Length: 172
Image (cartoon, rainbow, N blue to C red; front, side, top):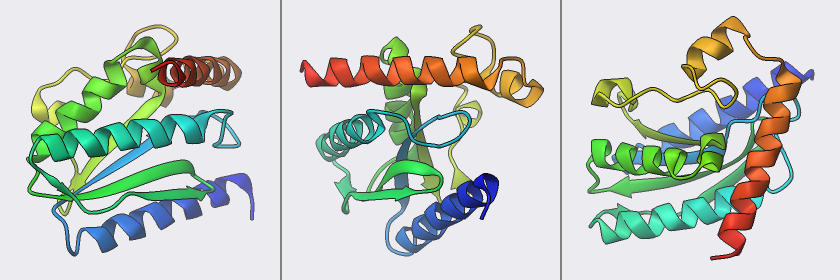
């Protein structure tokens, strides 16, 4: 299986698990890293995802929601976590995810998705600003779609930001 097929199979595995969780819970919070290029793993990714996930789980509980469990998944799409939640307002959960993604400069490597039976909750739908490109500060989706920045530069920045996040969380 080639690299692309491996990533697609990993994404399919994530999707199947999300759908299974949504049979019982109303929202699934998925935390992963935006890792350009291949492989979809970088040093420190597991530590960063695990610690952000546990913080999100605690905050969800503090908000009065009922997180069901925490599931960690490592496959061709990279390392990720999923938390199924009941009693959560999806917009508030998305705002929590966006806060993590914008918390510090290194938060831009985080990819925190809020998924419901009707699909992912988007920033746009909530009137929130789009994700910023880590290289130029423009709209990240536009930069990615147009291939504005070399993958090597994006990957280097991702690795540096992941390291910054690991150091920050290690010092807490």
